[in-house]
Length: 159
Image 1 (spheres, rainbow, N blue to C red):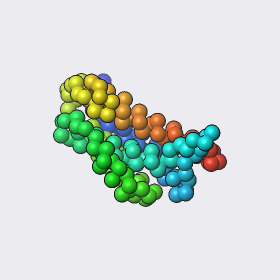
Image 2 (tube, one colour):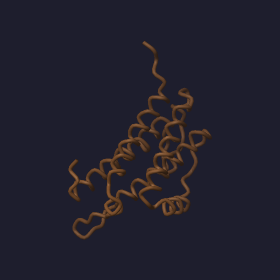
Image 3 (cartoon, rainbow, N blue to C red):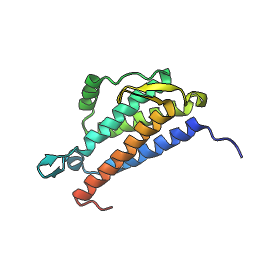
């Protein structure tokens, strides 16, 4: 039996999670993609906003992996980039491109560096490359797919 390459395994998980979120958002009508469900007077996040978040963060972490440096998120740039891609077509394209870039960067990342300690600048905590990839980027994508699926149920899409 061959030894699996952990970087490539993580890359495939990231890619698979991305396919799930992309498919969920792709099937939504444009007006529902930007619909904010309300509960007890509180507006929730729309699916488009969640897709844009994942696109930006996946793109950002791909750059970190390629450079080998865990940088900081530029939240002003986040707003600019999200606003520039705030349509169904643009957001889906950006998300797919960013997720593929992240998966490719993860696959190329040296497996012997996955355990190196880095600072998670989003949560200001110590972590490792592997934990950061799974705890934030894989989990975040899967979490948001679940949120999008719930929004779909709220407007009657039970498919």
